[in-house]
Structure formats: structure tokens, C-alpha cells
Length: 454
Image (cartoon, rainbow, N blue to C red; front, side, top):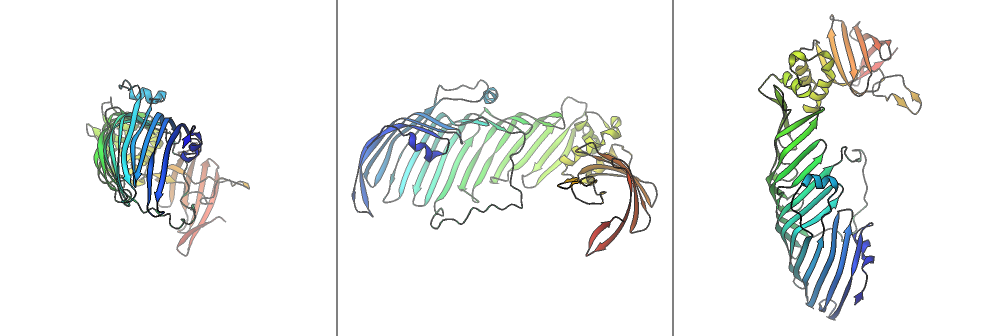
């Protein structure tokens, strides 16, 4: 067997992958179809692999495989690769000591008759992924033991340097009401193998994360143990060091940031404290609990009332310097921190002395056409679209209610006076955006409230 160019094998790796190198060898097969025996050897040289989807690259590769009876022995498998971090990744990892080239090697064997085998992999500063959004070089050893349908992978790995960047906006996702039909699985292709992990992963001192307002160095270690899937468990912790978080137009310092793993890998415990530093009152947010049930609260040093914590965090000044014009910003911040809890947001603003009997953050319920969009394929509907608004109101009497609504997403705002003539009949006068007079009669049909415009 003599294959002078392996470029044609790139299609097996992916649509944009590259491959190269050459193979030479001789292999003979004897015995029966049910129990064949193999004799021979295959050698590879100048092997090259580039897979852009994962960012894996290997150059100057070599390979040596021998066959004897029912046994395959991997005598040699080696790749090396230079570090090629992007400019942003290079700035993040700083002056970490870089090897001239990282190396990756493997050896082991497998018996086809007993379906047992073992392979060992060693890495020394090898860049396992190099993309515009991430870079990671690791050192360590791992072992894969094969025993029939069970594959047990164990090892200890340490990050020599790493950088992970996340785009400012999330990638588009399919809506909840869209079902993707991937067809029926082909009979006999269901995976019967079990993969069991016992891996220890340390982040080292040069792993960094940037994205969604968060910039930090990551450290710590976790152990992954159990069967891949629902049975996989994690123990350990990942900590943010010297980090900052951009929120509400301010840079918050991460005083304490930890993900503590003690069970399912997708539900770590949270222990985060981020503060706005350099002010007389350093206010911020503390997050405890776990990913599935986080508990968020405002904190400050020294401790001040809740409403004043929010003012110091968002505006950088105390309760006595907060004006009604700051209400929209404060309510928006309170909603994002407290999960859009209108009651809590209202209490915070009341505590700041913004004089109104009713302060709410929510959707505009004053439109007589409900949730009909402002623009349709037929044109303008002449009604405000349902959106998040800040509503500040005061009851002038038992029947008359004065309110002002300001859209948080745009400049639309309106003053309204509502006169409750009877229990079912109401007159609304609007000034500002789309002024007018509405007469509203409400009645209930099948327990669903309906609005009708005469």
C-alpha cells in the first residue's frame, strides 16, 4: 500500500477541513470471515490536519500502526502545532511562557477478539483549539480504556493558556413553538457504547474570559465523573479573579465570583458579588443559590436602605439627589436586577421619594386594541404597540385617576386622565402621544375580560 497524498481524506473531517501527508505499508488478512487475523504495518509521515470548525490543527505528524493476529498496536502517533492566538487572545494571556511548538502524542493497543484495549494520550502545551472566539493550550495525560461497550476515559489536564470570547449579542435561536423534525433514526444505529469519565481539569493561571460585559481571569479546577449524559457529575469550583462587569453604563468590580460544582454539571452553585467602587457608598449586586434558582439582592458598603442602594449603583449618588426624571432608568435597572418584579421596583422608587401612589414597570395595557402591532401589512393601526413602559400615577378621587406613561424602548409618552363613570363604563382623556378621548365599556364573557370601543 502506498498513498502519496492524503488530501482526499479531508472530506471525512468536515466541509472546510484540510489534510495532507502520505501513508505506506503492507497488511495481509487470513483466517475466517468471523475470525480474521491480521499481519502487517502502516507508517505515515508529514501528516497535516486542519479543522476550522473546532480550531484544531496538527502539522509534522507521524504514525506507526502494527497488526498481529487479532491485535492492533498504535506504536506511534504524534503531531505538533505552533501557537497562533488572535491579537485579542494574545493581549489577554499576556506574557505567559510559550513553547516553540506544542506537542501531542498517543500510543496503545486494541484486541478485536476480546474487544478490550487501552490508549494513552500526552499533551505538552498543545493548542487544541485556535479560533477567533477562543484559544486553549493544554498539558497533561489522559487514558481511554475499552472494554466491550464501555469506554472509560480518565486523566489530568491543565490549561497553559486560554482565552474565550463571547459575542456581544446571543446567537439566534429557534422559537419555542418551532419543532425541528430530524426524521426517524435509522434502525440499528442507536449508540450502544457507554462513555464514563473521570477527568480532572485545572484552569491554571492564564485562562481568561471576555464577553457580554464580563472581563475576567478564571482559575480553579473541577473533576468530571460519571457516565456522559444525565449521570455526569462535577465537583470543584471555578473562580473569577480581577474581573469586571459592565452594567447600567458603569464598570462593576467583581469582588467575589465563584461557580461551585457539587452535582449536575449544568447546575452549579453561585457566589457572586459585584460592586461599583470609588464612591462614598459602594453598592452592587450579590447572587447566591444555583443556576436553576438564583437569589439576587442589592448590597452596599456601608449598608443603606434598599432604595438608596439602587440609586448609588445606577446613578452614583444618594437618595437626596434623585429626581423624578431618573425614574425610568431606576425602574429599568430594578427590573433587570430583580427579575421585572413590579412590586419590588415600585417599593424601591417610593423609598427614593418619587411622589406617586402607583409606580409600575410593565406592559402598556391602555391600548384599546390590545396587543395588535402598531404596523401591519395593511399599514398603520393608529395605536401604540404593547411594550414595556414606566407608569407613574396618582388617584385624585375615588373615580378619577391621573397617570403618565413613558415607553422605555422609545420616546413615546402620554398623560392620561381616567374617569370611572360606573363599574363597567370608563372615559379616558389622553394628551401627548396620539391625543384623544376614549369611551370604554367592559364586560366579561367566559371569564375573559373584553374591551369594546363604541
